[in-house]
Structure formats: structure tokens, C-alpha cells
Length: 115
Length: 109
Image (cartoon, each protein chain N blue to C red):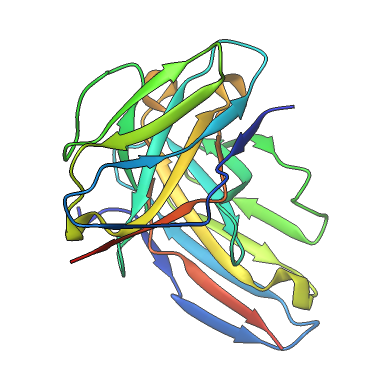
């Protein structure tokens, strides 16, 4: 296991298009998180899953954003009708359960550019 | 509101000098605080947590509840310490980490 992986690493899209990102967590981790990071900011929480259940969503996650983790393994984050303000680095992280949830292992990120 | 503040965007020191990266937090409960680090071209990774009170790569951090601070310190900086450092607060029941904006540490030879 080489850690958390994300695909694609870079995505350039035109405003109004839909995009989907994938995250593969560390195999024994049951928690999976999505964060967004813009220039000069720290990562901002979007949502997280425990197994296949989506337990928390940030107010940052507008109706155009949807995340799934259908079998409790990999997760996808979809952004519909992208806007220029969606341009950011999208980070995925995974962790063990509640007692160790603070120790999150991050992926390399997907950099989204909306033109 | 839960918040983490890192007042310095950039901290530049010479090799061998002491380093202190500041972090202040706002949290209504009993906080769990962490430092994450991102070296150039690498992914974000956990550096240390306040509960363990351990020293990692020569860094230590003490939680001061009175001053609501969790500053990261190292007595003698090394060039390989150059990186982006993020202070983070664990949201507990919400399950997420709340990050500060980060401080870029540059250690000059």
C-alpha cells in the first residue's frame, strides 16, 4: 500500500462543465475526508465518510458538489457546473476510526483549474 | 467558533538559530491540537500532537490553555526543516481537522 492516491492529479476544465475526482484511501482506514485548499489558505474541510456513510458536510459544500463512497473503499467527488471560484487543490485524506481520526494521511491532491 | 490562527505567513531564520512558529486557537471544549508539515513536493503529513508530548525531528509544542496557544519550537533549526507548517485543531464529533493558514519556514545556510 503506497498511501492515499488521487486521480487525476491535474484537471483543467471550462466553466460550466462537470468534473469528477477519485480518491483511494489506505486500505484499512474506514474514514475518508475531502478538503479544499486555495492559495494562501490551509486545507478547508468539505465532507467525510465513515465506511460508506457520509457523516458530515461543510457549508462549503454547495449543492453543486456531491461525494460518494459506495462500497466504503474509494470515494468520488463531483462538481457540477463548475465556476471559476472552484479552482483549488482538492485533497483527500483517510484515517482509522474515532480514536485515531486526528491522524489523517493525505493524498497528493487534485489541482482543478476552471477557465 | 472553532478557529486556528497562525499570525506569520513566512518565517525566515539562519541554520542553528531557534525557531518558534506561533499558533493560537479558539475552541469551546477541551482541544486536541496538532502540527502538520508539508515539505516541498511532498504531501501533508502529521508532525506531532499535543497529547503525546514527544519531540519529533527536534520539534516540540506545548499546549497553553490559558493563552490558547500551541506554538511549535525547535532550539536549532536545520535547512531540512524548511517547509510549510500548519497548526490544526481536531473537531472531535465533527470528525474533521480545522487548519490554520500555515507558516512557511525558510532556514537559510
